Amino acid sequence: MKFGTVAIIGRSNVGKSTLLNRLLGEKISIVSSKPQTTRTRIMGIVHAEGAQIAFLDTPGLHKPEHLLNRRMVRTAVETMEGADLFYMLMDATSRPGPGDLTAVRHMKDVLAKQPCPVILVLTKIDLVNKQKLLPILDSYSKLFAWTEIVPVSAKVDDNVDRLLAVTVPYLPSGEGAYADDVVTDQTMRTLAAEMIREKVLQETDEEVPYAVAVEVDEFVEQGKLAKIRASILVERETQKGILIGKQGERLKSIGTQARLDMEQLFGMKVFLELWVKVKKAWREDEQALVQLGY
Ligand SMILES: Nc1nc2c(ncn2[C@@H]2O[C@H](COP(=O)(O)OP(=O)(O)OP(=O)(O)O)[C@@H](O)[C@H]2O)c(=O)[nH]1
Ligand SMILES: [Mg+2]
Image 1 (cartoon, rainbow, N blue to C red):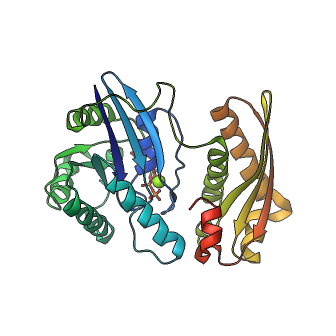
Image 2 (image 1 turned 120 degrees about the horizontal axis):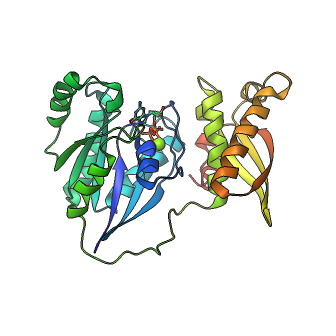
């Protein structure tokens, strides 16, 4: 039996959360086209034949501007420090860029203290012409002495099974630490907050996605019904206006989409009540960040 933890790392937007969800076959980590979507460490446990693997999704490694971002990068680094193996994700639709080099630098700092195998996972290959893939793969392969290189598409499920098969031999021997029915460390409360935030990210642009946090104020289960009351925090009045939209249209749409996702994941009916609140500069506020789970 093999048991180990795999840290899924890389710059923002390379597809870390999409890959975690694909490995699990369940959506527990939110995804959006905007960078810095994931803000915390998110564990998903795969129970395979002869192996149990705890995959750890992480915030994208980037140059931080706010206290929130510094904490995000620290979370990613700390997650690496506790892992048995890394998946370093890089995007096949572009050539290596400054973001990838920043990610490699962070990775090397951790490896200098505690070496472990690193698999380069080249993502989004569904968007790349087969002939173009080889030179791209070559350019990424030069960045580090990767243990293995595996191109995948998490979106259309191409080669992800092979990635899993390649990974298992590098994991330590041992019994699994988690019961067979444990899939994630995320609570229903956290999952609910994140699903709301995902819809906000999908429905807004420019500075709004980064200025938003979601707090669940009340989560009550009554038989097959969950009653959820949540606050969407923004930093300014103008952002509040944008989120609510004309005659409350945008907030309503965010609520409906989030509710449908929750009903599917939780397998119960959901009654969702959303409020938008202004909390100035919460991204720089240590106490607020701790309260929000960042
Ligand atoms: N076509 C295609 N798109 C993908 C694939 N994987 C991820 N994406 C898209 O890339 C964008 C970013 O995906 P995420 O999974 O949120 O990326 P991430 O690395 O977790 O990003 P952060 O949490 O911000 O660091 C989303 O729009 C995804 O739908 C893939 O295999 N193929
Ligand atoms: Mg993510």
